[in-house]
Amino acid sequence: MAVETPVFRTLRAAAAFPWRSLVASALALAIGWGGIVYAANNSVQGAKKEENAFDGDAPTAILIEASSGSVLFEKNADELRAPSSMMKLMTAEVVFNAIKKGDVKLTDEYRISENAWRRGGAPAGGSTMFAVLNSKVSVDDLLHGALIQSGNDACIALAEGMAGNERIFATDFMTKRARELGLTKSTFGNSNGLPDPANKMTVRELSRLARYVIQTYPDMYKLFGEKEFTWNKIRQQNRNPLLNSLAGADGLKTGYTKEGGYGMVGSAVQNDTRLIVVVNGLEDPDDRATEAKKMLEWGFRNFETRTLFAADQPVGYAKVFGGDSRSVKLASPQPIKLMVPKNGSEKLIARVIYNGPVRAPVQPGQPVGVVRVWRGANVAMEAPVYAAESVGTGSTMRRAIDGASELVIGMFRASAEKL
Image (cartoon, rainbow, N blue to C red):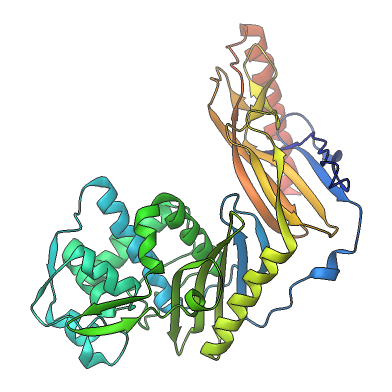
């Protein structure tokens, strides 16, 4: 069962930042182990929260910090929309993953079928790398064509080369891989984002996908920042307008269909901080570029990274069932960080969430749950937490008492659900 525990932590800012402290306060308490619910309030003294709020025009949008996953701004971030060519990020990730595992090589060559040429090539009139019918093109060149020129023919060729059929690639490769990455809402009907009722993604899941690609495939990610690519003696510019208009911009993809409108997944690095922006549903390509740039500039200008918990510092405790200790200390081997306003005021709520009680024995480093931080009604970030110590199996009496307690709690909960 899901359990939430308090995050007891006091953050003392450096002398230059005397405004922050994290104060734990118990908000609710259920009977027994089954539903202990606490919250930690991050109370910040200073200017009003609304002073530096972002005012955007995109119907759906999100801005995150890549390292921590901190959400700086979101608007209708979980609304499913046609992702258009931004969906090519999923195709790219599937190929990148196959290359990483050794199932596919950059030197492998796939044939440009009549389907790829007719639906995604020059005859289609859409974005294309102008691959020649029945020619063989390397995976490396197809990735260049897909990500720099947004070539629909390149994506279809990759899909057919890996799965034999684009529909199979969309369902058995893209959708399956999306679920493995925790993208629970995304669905795919093809490899390139051309109009299809099955093509649906949220800006939140697009941002998570972009973050994963950036962190997992740093060498392959460089493709997104290349400003031009020539194929079949036709030179085309990268369609990402941020590459020439914003310092530090190096990716990722634009997209447009009549159904989805104009959208963009963009990323930039300034002062060692990487931000990722996703906007979708705009009516004009210039508005798309302006909105994405404005949001990134706002994030760089108004936020900074702060450490909530140092590496291996205790974050909280989880209840243990049948152990020689009633609880286990939780921590993270990596610092848990969050982007916060530089000169603003906001209230953060942090909770450790896990399925519990955790059954003994418990080993150090065992995954237990996550610490989740809310900014208002929205989740600002979450990070996994692990057991920081071992807990051995308790005595027979201890296990019996814990079992009886769980039985009573289960009966109480079942009765409550019937009311």
